[in-house]
Structures are given as structure tokens and as C-alpha cells.
Length: 303
Ligand code: 13P
Ligand code: SF4
Image 1: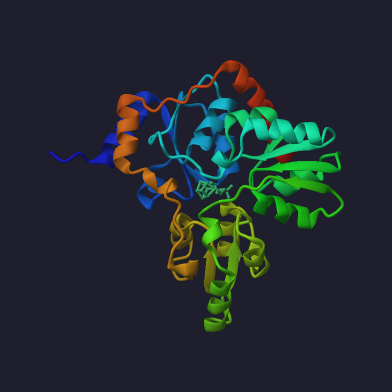
Image 2 (image 1 turned 180 degrees about the horizontal axis):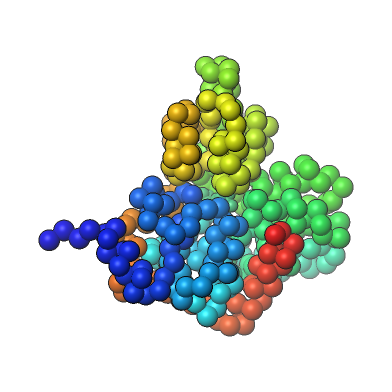
């Protein structure tokens, strides 16, 4: 007999006292069964404050790890164990240590897309929706920003009075966007509005009408009275946009932008995750506490 994954997930979720969180880059059917769908910051707030005993994080590893760092008493499950983030893997604790020695007066700001080890070495964490606010409010003039050089340089452009030391990391999905595609879309539809994620490279950001996190892009599109939009971020965001505004038209550069890691999670994985209570995120307490400081500073400064 075929399993109705949706029904079984809802049953198991109640039995386990679990909440299902899904990032906007997840598949549409995963977003539809989730209790909360959002950007990285919103989901980390829910993970921090929710009452349920179990968090099923439909996203990538650093997201589930951040939930565990913020809520150590809860069981945090990642449905697909190898759903990682190549950008997060580009930074390591040893490299941060070296930079710290070279720039002893700098504050270390890490993007939430980073490992627990890197967070443990950092002063404060940020997401694309609060990075500007957090860095603006830091007293220090020197900022080590990692791992995303694109988000880092986007913030740097807006706070020219601070000195930024940028790590050489990037998102392989956003790197694929070519500015020519944006120009082509504008030529074809002069009324089109371009919204881009700050993980895009500078020429792409410069051609955009709006830059923001996934949640901010979705809000921008929903509030705008424009009809056509080119969305320069992972195509999963289109699901909420189409639900919000079925009569608007959405285009993606190159015809598609998909993060293979975000797309690894299927309904059957969420079902197996709740059935077998796997994969359980565990961290050494000493490491968790160090990483907690950076994340809790993000919630203090970025809220
Ligand atoms: P946000 O949801 O914070 O915009 O993050 C985008 C992202 O790349 C997550 O991996
Ligand atoms: Fe990492 Fe980019 Fe995928 Fe986000 S979209 S999880 S930054 S590879």
C-alpha cells in the first residue's frame, strides 16, 4: 500500500510534539506541510522560541545546527544528513584564527551560513536581513566578515567608513547569475522589476531594483503594484510569491536557479525523519556555548 506521506507526517508530528520549519528554498510540497516557512533569521527566531520538544529543520545543515545551538534542550532533526551548504564549508576555524591574529582590533562577523566551529570563533553572527543593522551598530571600525564576500562587499558599500576584511567565500547558486541576463530581461520587458539576493555578485546587484533576503524579496514583490519581476535568487521563493500574487509574472535568470542541497529534501525524508527520529544534530557543549554567543548577539543586535 502506498504511504500518504502528508497524512503520516501530520500524525507523527503530533505524536512527537514536533514543529516543522522550512526555508523558502525548499520544494513547494515541503513548504506546504511546514508549520513555519521563512528566511534564515525568521526561522532561527522560531527555533529559539518555539514550545515544541522536537524541531524538524527542512533546510541545510548550518540551519539545523544553529537551531540546536540556540535551543540545546530540544531535539533538532535534519531530514537529509548530507544537505550541506558549500559556502558554509568554504570557511574554517583555523583561517579565522589567522585573521584574528593579523587584525586583533577587528570584530568578527560571521554569516549564519557557517559551521558551528566558525561561529564559535566569531563575535556576532548575522543573516542577509540584519547584517547591515548589526555591523552599523558595532563600535569597531575594522570588521572581519565571512564567509560570503558578496554579502560582505554589499554591506561594505553602504558603510564606507568601516574597513572590511572579506573572506573569499561565495554561494555557487547565486554565482551563476549573469548581468547580461538581467539586461536582456529589461530589454524584453522594460517594465520588469529586478529583485536580487545580496549573495549575488556586484554587477548583478548593481542592475537590481531591490536587494534583500529571501523574506524581504517576497515582501517587496507582494507590496509592489508592478506586474513583472525577475527574481535573482533560488527559485524556491517563487512558491510563496505565486500563492501571494497568482496574477503577477515571475522570471528567473537563465530560466532556473536551483540549490541542489536545498532540493535534497522530499516528503518521504520528512516522514522517515519523524518516524526514526533522525538525523539528530548533536554538538559538544563547549563548542555550542561558544557558538551560542555569536548567535545570541545576533538576536540582541539584529532583532
Ligand atoms: P536568507 O533566507 O536569509 O535570505 O538566506 C538565503 C540563503 O542562501 C540560505 O542558504
Ligand atoms: Fe548555501 Fe547558496 Fe544553497 Fe544557500 S543557496 S544553502 S548559500 S549553496
